[in-house]
Image (cartoon, rainbow, N blue to C red; front, top):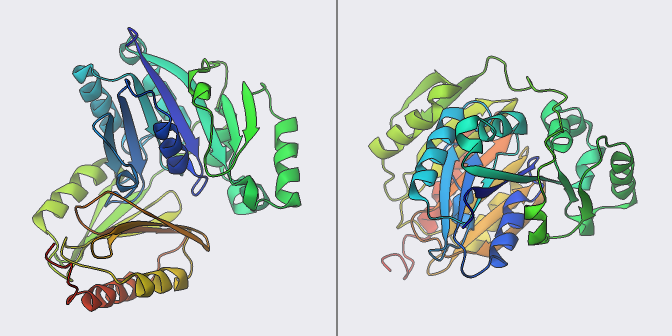
Length: 360
């Protein structure tokens, strides 16, 4: 290990493929290295960490319930301190939520205490070039500053981009100043690990550094508790975890957590480990949901477990090694009928009550 811990920020708007890219990088990690990964999620229940297959050489630190750039800034500082106290890592990767503004995180990493211990290297931003055709995305100050503050810009999902999206990305790249250290296109998050060791440019500046500094309220609802709490974002993380422990899920009776802010609404459910979800019914229901911007879920199908990933209307799934409980998080631009969604998820779980895998 070097004296300072090599550190990378991997950013990108919702659905750009950050988690997939990090999984790819992990698959190419030198066998003798141990990495620490901080995974930040806007939703309360925390699902992204279930997508990572850890073998003892990866330390995953989940931070759920807001953005580490602002609402969970204190949580980020505490997590960094804890990781540095362990002194057992060869690289640190931070994955903010898709709504996360990089400026606050970079400011934290550059503070004297951390800059003496962390070797801040390239900030890598992934974008789905099709997002450049969506005015709701391109008008987002956070989206624009994710690009502005990136040392390396990666257009992911090029296999799904049409000529208009490709042209929009080319136009974007022709107008960037200062120039990026690298601009590339890829599919399935396949990026060269050598990009991690590009040196942080340092002179990059946010165009909208105060994009997240506004008054927001967060709402949490634990279904078993039967009541609603409203608190500022600063209290979201600790509050959500406290109620998750107080209201453990029962078979076919999940715990629900709701979060709102940054013009987004999320709802997540944690199911009992014994709940089993028949794949066909689960896939059909996830496909039928309307108004969803993002969905991630880890589900027990029986003996196998699967990770569902939905971006807009596109759905993918992969087998995972995670084996603790089933959980799902939905993000939307407007509140959905969370009660109806929960009712249907419970109905699907009820279908698995007589599964021969239930007690395995």
